Image (cartoon, rainbow, N blue to C red):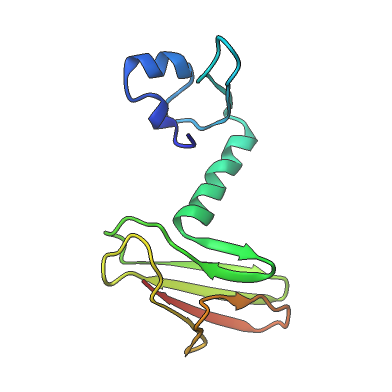
Length: 136
């Protein structure tokens, strides 16, 4: 639902969607007579959906109960990427390595050169720099 191109795969669905196939809408109607019509396009709310989709669901950067974990869902051709995240006074430098050309799945989560078995780290406000290496 979130990818606008999926609403424009053919002329019939594009006519129903009624907005640009390259612009995410913040709303897709389910009202009678308007089902499938996009709305609130070119709006800050739709940009936040893109941001959330990219950061959380593609790059896999997730914070839950003050724990940081990385669960990528990327194209297998991506070899690596980096995220630099500042949490209050601390800095988290994250490098994701995909040498096995995977789409998903974390094999190792390494914090400051020590493997973390539960593959997550508690975010700390201590002014330190934390280096995380994620091996897919």
